Image 1 (cartoon, rainbow, N blue to C red):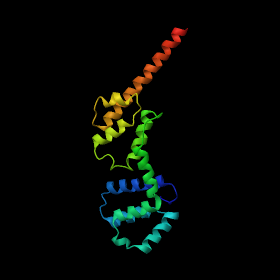
Image 2 (cartoon, rainbow, N blue to C red):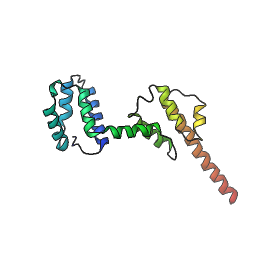
Image 3 (tube, one colour):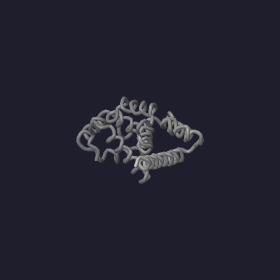
Image 4 (cartoon, rainbow, N blue to C red):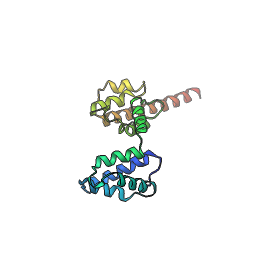
Length: 175
């Protein structure tokens, strides 16, 4: 069910679920896609859709037009630009590699035109890594995103292990 509301991520998640289901059901007709997507509307979303049907010839509406109207209503362009800007300026900072990669993946979907291929995506991910990690990964000149993530996770794990061993050594030395 989709009720509408102010949270753009709920709207985006709903649209993602609908599109996944439409693909799995092999629905290609735009009108049928729209009817299936709006079938689960309730409350605010149902009222909004009723107003859309009064303004547009829904039978002739394309799926892309429906999505455009849906996102205009429930996921403002301002919010999408904000996420795009966050992606452009994303750096690891104090985040773990897992946290950084999760945020990278989340924000990436709002800025796919910034990184048009796998190599550029990998380069963008690596460029945002912490100063200690970035040179080690850059030196490997990885071109596959998931490979870069995996190597970075391995380096992070090794660094944590090294810190633990160093701390144990200090405790032994002080004892």
